[in-house]
Image 1: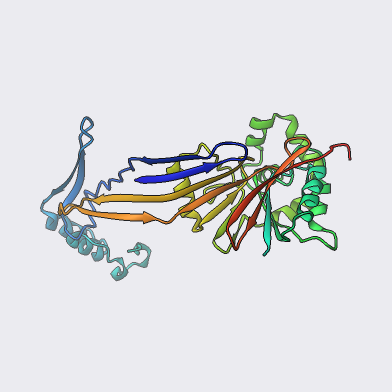
Image 2: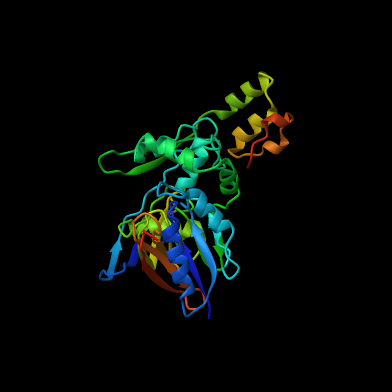
Amino acid sequence: MKLSVRVQQPEKTSNKNTFTTPMKRIINAGSVGEPRHGKPDATYVLYDTETEEVTLREVPYNYTKTCLAILEQGLPSIFAWRLARGMEFAEKADDPTHICQK
Amino acid sequence: MTQWAILSGIEGNLEAYEAVLADIKRQDIPVKAIYILGDIIGLQGNNEGVAKRIQHPHANEVKPQVCTGWWEEQCFDLYALSGVGDAVALREHYGADAIAQLWDSVSRETVQWLRSLDFGFHEEDCLLIHGSTVSYEDELTPETPGIQICDRALRAEATTLFCGRSGLTFEYCVETGRIDSKILTLEQKQQTSQETLNSCRVIGVGNVGKTPQQATYTLYQPLTKQVTFQTVYYDSNL
């Protein structure tokens, strides 16, 4: 971020300054059990504390087994649906108390 | 051509407020609006007198538009109308005696009036507020980092942010600003973007009542966007 600023106060010399300031990083750590990136794979983040490097990780697993378990337990089928697709679509849920915002 | 007078921090000092009103009347360019950015009450003497004077201006005076500030929030806290009800910030800054002093010097009727006041005003491309959109406690000064000034101005959705929390008079302009951003996703497609910030500024409007015999406030011409800081010296034995 590059800024040019000027500060004036009564009875003081005007102070003009141009500087570059590093901005912050925002890292979304993903989701292992309920991913929302359009795929069913588990996601997480590796962070190198020395180099500050961030690596986004995506791990495939047998999610169909989990989906079947959801259905077998009698949980709302939308839970299996959204896990299989990695996206929110809770409006289809039978039980409205489970509706989440997209 | 007209202008606004913007003041903050009367803090119960009626003599200082009268001196500023007299200075406003002396202006060649007529003052069509008066904004008081909070802290009309405090420990400087006559809170009730100031509250009444603001609510009932003389026939030839503009009725001020008032928003709440740090002192009003302490009062609401004391009356258990907000916060936790034990005025922690007031005790920390001014000691235990200040609690009784503030309690005794503001009537319940005045508290009700204070409760009806706004948090700030959006006028044209300006936001007028005691602290900032973050909080009434947010203190912006000439030493505030530029990035923080940008953040407050962007939140304000205004070109000019007038504030009174610091009690200082200053003009802090961000003349140009550029943000470079990079976005990395799981697909490893790195997107870069560049955003240019419009120029913005924060104006510290001064303090009317805290310093005996010396009040500061701000005049603003909406047409030319020009800011003028006023210092008024007055006799405190009036």
